[in-house]
Length: 140
Image (spheres, rainbow, N blue to C red):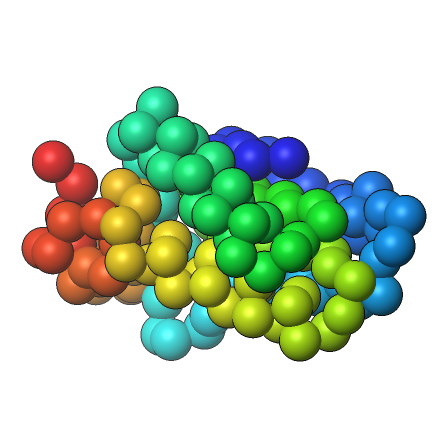
């Protein structure tokens, strides 16, 4: 599953689906809203382009690291501290491939997928300087 969505996901069901024939390792990355003196986080995406980029990243990772399964779900909208933002689940025949594939995916997302986040505090909000898509951190 490759998706940009507001809804949360059942990570347990995704893990079950990742256990394809030949799987020796499943790696789960669950990025969550961290309590950095914020109350909420607002995420926006250029959805069509971002989804295509996520699909490309998943395909590249599958080829490079012999992955058997890839899920990337990036949430958008307003999220509270402790909520899931980004879930990446990969399976492979061996742990090294699974770890390397997962790491490749997160770094590629941070480098070039047009998704932006704004941290909301008691005193207002601030766009987080960008390692997503465009350098300013603010959506266009």
